[in-house]
Image (cartoon, rainbow, N blue to C red; front, side, top):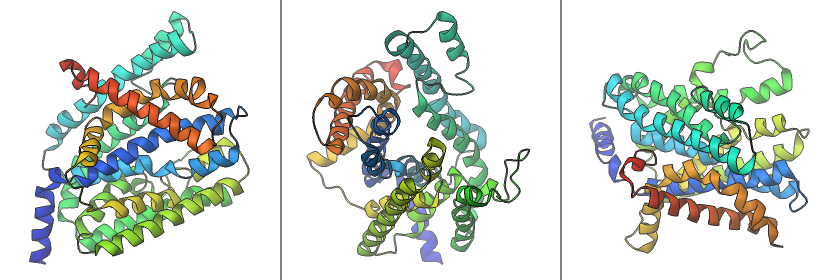
Length: 361
């Protein structure tokens, strides 16, 4: 027991030195870009691509957002800051960029993509504190992240004292909760959910808080696993999750709500994908060299890349990548690579301005 406590303390002390998390960040932000390129396949269906390839790709990237939350669980749980200090530090990092970039997307959409009246622009600006708009759907993640930041200092004392078995019990409840959307789809019943109550029995231990705890658990208790075991288990989990996601996507009656149910971030199949990717890379050493420098540089600006990439992805896909007679998968990859490079360059340049750094890093 003392050895385990010593190990956990050493893990917490050295979290800031974990460079393999940089690789996970880069993979996650790239897959977010892939997700928005893939929207052009699934939603537009303009003849250049087909639903089949949209499904192949769409079933692949669902782990991106859960992977970000797993990383947060590694880095932020349990926090040693008191509640007020934590809120000041973390919420101040999220809310100003949310409002600033939300407003920027409203203006960009109205002036470049879909001309709107001044009244409509103002309406979209005013609603930003309450919700994102059509011009910036990816910003939903920041609203969700605010919620996670609000709960982290509350659950941290429990996390710090919880035993491995206690964590496993709570995570088992979380895993069970990921099946509830499917249960509701099949039976229209879900542990008390009805027209006047959306909070089922397991609601308070479901959702992204489960990924937070999962990230902490995997990082704290997996160092004892061999590298081969982690890699093989990761590959198995990811392929299983991907296979289930793809099969269900082509099996359910086609509709956007049904596809969203299968691609739901807190579904068992996407959970398998996210944990699989985490295990494949957990503990990987990045040797000094060009590759490590590139990964660290992209990871450094990953938050900014996430914020600004939506300015480029649609335009690049529509006016550049989709004009080439390429294989659908290669075409999406091309648009994503160009978007990543442009977003990185823009963020790098904007970070030369001191006050912009606070809105990008």
